[in-house]
Amino acid sequence: MAIANVKVTLNEDIKTVWEIVTSLENYAWRSDLSKIEVLEAGKKFIEYTKEGYTTTFTITTFEPMKRYEFDMDNNNMCGHWTGLFSKTDNKTEINFTENITPKKWIMKPFVGIYAKKQQAAYISDLRKAMEDRLS
Image (cartoon, rainbow, N blue to C red; front, side, top):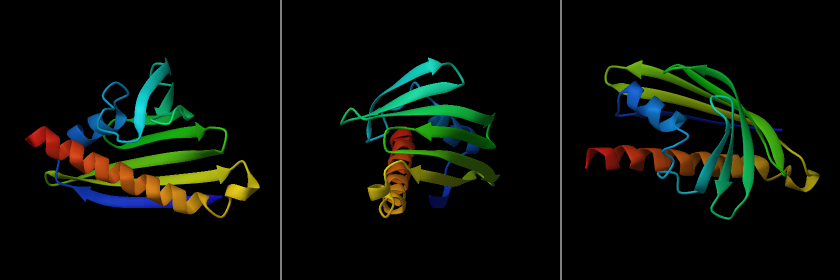
């Protein structure tokens, strides 16, 4: 099992950050995805990477502008993601934690590194999405 955490303060209001992160329709800002398929509105969806790899997500907590959680599952891993959102002035602090268990023993040494890399790409994409909104 690997736990990866990223905590960042963004120069954007909490409502905007929440809407960008939780939207299953507006995902074009994500550099890693080709599409999202909603299986059950508000409950279950599948993300497709640009390489065609799929991960199924089951939403377990949805507290607007506070907490977003889901279980994740694909051929290589399963796990849980928690996103905490808090407001500070006109800024938003996000605190995202992934708890991942690899399904293949060979992946065990690499899962933590992979999760950190994914989180860094996600935050970079999120910052760019916010910059693009302003321009």
